[in-house]
Structures are given as C-alpha cells and as structure tokens.
Image (tube, rainbow, N blue to C red):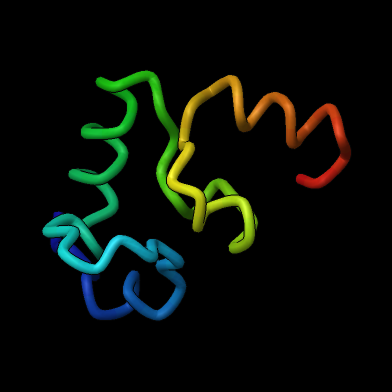
Length: 67
C-alpha cells in the first residue's frame, strides 16, 4: 500500500517537532500503541500540546466530554 504522507501531514496535529513519524500514520500508531498511548490526532490541540498521550488522559477527556 502506498503511504499518503503529504496528504496525512495536512491533518496531522502533532506538535512534537523532531518527530520522524509525522505523516506516517502506520508507524505513528504502532509506536504509540506499543507505549500504551494514542497518537496526537486522537486529542484536541490543547490537550495534545501537553504531550500526555496516555489512554488514561484520553479517558479523562472523554469523561469530561472534551472529546
């Protein structure tokens, strides 16, 4: 399957600048799931910027109806 990196970058909200996985959604998802995290695109921008990508943080945001 062909990677659509340039198209993916249009909606990637990852604010970690040296990230080598930006636009490479398959790699990003695999990396974060291995660390019990979700990628930046699962979080609103204000929540993403604190770099807490844990399942627990995501759960708190859902419970607070912020997602």
